[in-house]
Length: 303
Image 1 (cartoon, rainbow, N blue to C red):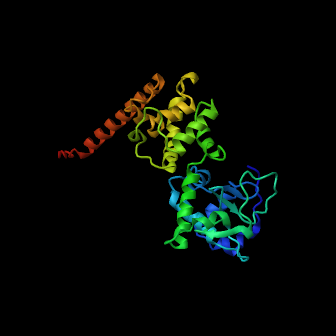
Image 2 (cartoon, rainbow, N blue to C red):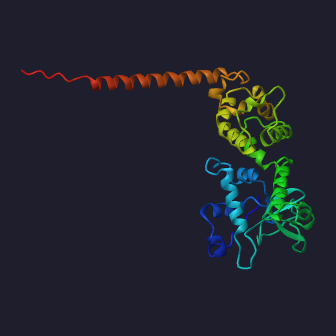
Image 3 (tube, one colour):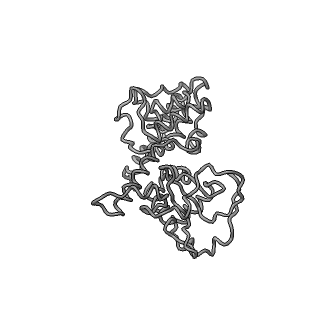
């Protein structure tokens, strides 16, 4: 990601200073995630994963969406929004307006619809062609627009990701860097789209119904699995795609032993776990004896 120029005027901007704390944090973090044109993928799960990969527990999908909508509805003095949310080709995108950065090439994201061809549809700027046909007899314009926007959101949620940055957040933590394309394909299918691998059932997914929940679980268990797999020889560590398709990431390795699909712990890991258990047992016994001694009555012997 290229270096960004953060202008001092942001400190005195009435629009930015009117944002809530979460709104301003999202706006400032988004500056580091967009391209030179200020654009990025507008799907909430993708925005959440890119901006708050290490704070997923502090930022729910709803909170991220609310912060985005706050920035979209907040206007500068000239009437332009801090963030423009628009739809192109059925996918949702965000653009920081008046971004003012040095442009080094073409944007990989589509341009927003031209001003002369845009209309407000459910709070999202779209081309007139995309807005017009959504109206239906017997329904209000706002209801038709809301339905059209929901359909576009659903379509964009199942489309392929534009880049592999979200996948890279996990891949960089995985201890075997091989077959990246296959791993990315498995990541998109299992984590982003929730497709069950061959032989798996819905119960194997442990109730993880949306991509944000699956990604959060994957990242939550990744550190423990990294420690476990590093005990194994390199060729005995599963490929990224194999690991994702096995669904072993749903549980941390300490509890994965109860899962018949989980790989056996290495001998080194088992010895280390037994050693930790022995130490914990010794310390627990010592504390118990100390408590028993404290509870015994004192005997006072007079001469």
